[in-house]
Image (cartoon, rainbow, N blue to C red):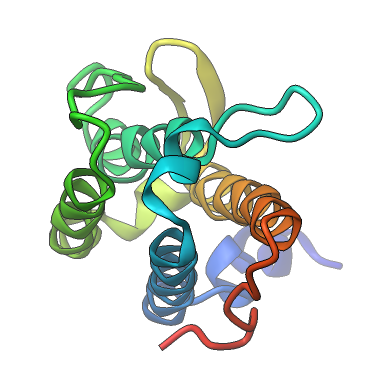
Length: 166
C-alpha cells in the first residue's frame, strides 16, 4: 500500500458517524427495555455470582455516555460520577437514562470528525482514540446488558429480544 493510500485511510472509511450513532442509540433503546423488564426491588437488590445489582451497572452506563462524549470534545470538562440519588426508584434511573439520549445526540453533532481519530484521555485516566472510546461505551453497555439478561432469566423473566433495538 502506498503512503498516499495509507494517509487517506481513516476510521471512517469503515465506520460512518451517522450510522454509528444510530447503532449506539439502538443499543440504548434495547437496554432501556431491559431495565423496564426488571421488577423494582430486584433492579436494586438482585445479583448473581457477586456481580453488582443492575441499578449500579446502569448508573455506570449513564456516567459514561454523555459525559464520555463531552470528554472527547473537551478533555477535562466532565466528571465520572457513577452514582446519583435515585431513592430506589427505577423511574428515577429511567428518567436519567432518557435525559442522556438528547445529550448524546447534541454532543454527537458537535463532535468534529477529526476527534474520532485523535488520541484522548477521558476522565483523566482512560486513553484511546475518540472512536475507540465510543466503541468502548457501546461494548460496555452490551456487556452490562448481558449481565442484566442473566439476572432476568434467573428471575424467570424473558428478556427483550436482542435484535429489538427500535
